[in-house]
Image 1 (cartoon, rainbow, N blue to C red):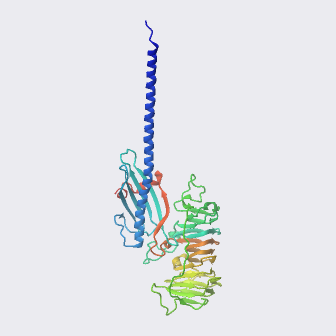
Image 2 (tube, helix red, strand yellow; image 1 turned 90 degrees about the horizontal axis):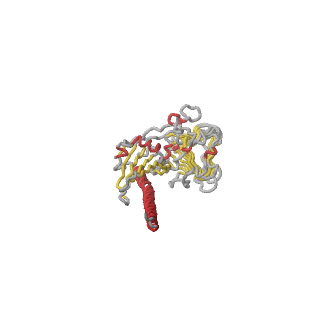
Length: 494
């Protein structure tokens, strides 16, 4: 038998090696093609993830436009939107479609607006959907939840440029709405435990570590700073909680601080203010005797207010009674320009009256302080039920440099608002303080309970809404909350 030639065996080996190399190259090429396709798909979805956010924000802008259009024009009817009524808990919704992109990709956004009439702070849910053209992968969805607030100077309870300090051992902060229907035709709602809300907002734009010192205070609402973590200042008896706060040991560092009610991105404007440009009736010096405004025979301005000027207010065991709409400008610019004390000195804002006080000087209110309301039971102090709305007593600090000291003391009810961009405001007492305070610094030295009047967000008229909280809903549980309420119904699918 002849042996097989060696070169024949070698050619067979080369053929096998070549086939193996071709197989390896083929597998590599397929793998690289698959990798390239996967990379293209990932890149494409990343691109349209951004598009989904943009579409969702387009829906938010449509809702913001409609809301602020309604603020400027109450007759605005939200054309194209559906709604379930016009009450305080009403809602409106609409679907915007027809968004077109490359590669036959399309998009749409469903928008739902809680409290769309603006009687309370509106909340917007925008759910965008991007459908990729010619792709078998799932559509891309982005969900955004936005809470709005009015741009009033008094959109929050306690607001400081520098610091807010609670020195009392039993101080508390909460809120209520004295005008839930935003209508002068309905009676004001006095503060009580029945109407108590958890929107007692406290904020400082400072980034300093001591910008908000909670200590032993109980905040039934929100605390915000410009950068520092306010939770480090909460003492053993203090808290930052709300009605929906449920302790979660997995996410909470302390059972008395709800992390959802703390933020470090607070911002606010501290614009200087001046007294209105009007013709003022000169009262001829200081108000230092028992005085009633308006005086008999004086004529109100066309806007219904009586405008007066004086050098100062010095009520030592004397009173100033206000029984109509009065604007009072004090012309002294240094020292203590408002001094109410002596045991029984008092400013009384009676039923049907209001007082807007403009001063550049220091303010010291002690004695029986300010009675914004009527002491119906005659016990010498006001109760929450007897107090007028805080907006009926206003202190406007007009100082533009340096420090303006504003001290408010008493054991009754102080119902009012204070706006003083240069003010060092100190509240000392054991009673109830209702309204809003905006100043450079705020110090609560007594054990007073502070109640933010949410209706003050409407003060000024025609104030547009702006975003106060923006967050993307990324978890299934967060989305399921809205899915359970609206998915499959006309609100989301129409």
